[in-house]
Image (tube, rainbow, N blue to C red):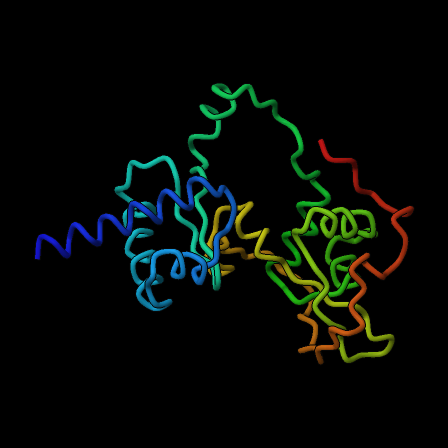
Length: 210
């Protein structure tokens, strides 16, 4: 029994070392391959580790984020001031208020078209859309089955990592009243325009990243 516990601790230590050294999302399949385990047992071990790192009583400085195919360490938000001070990191690079508004509308209503977001905000959102696409926080996922077949957008896995959540279900509850949700789309990924595809970035109320 003690030997099995030691073996498990050794595997957890190896996984922790891999994720720490990587600094980016690592696939469960790759971890399983390196450790000589099957995928199911690897995920079970990592899930157990996440409970230790992410539990309410945990005093660790990092969270272990679990996604569909990958996992990653990220620092906990409450320690950000200490990190900035210790590493000499300046504030900056944050999203503008307009980009945050667009991101929030998409996150809570995805998939959503740009015209839907414009309707919610009451202003043109072209620049914010292109900025968020460039940053990898949103992406086109198909087109709405409606006249003109407007592009549909969703948040990305990077969005989850940046905001330190594992799924959209962890987004804070909101009581904001929004226009009626757009109908379910018919996916058409072959026609997705990664550059944004809808309108120009010239007309915008969005400021540059602070």
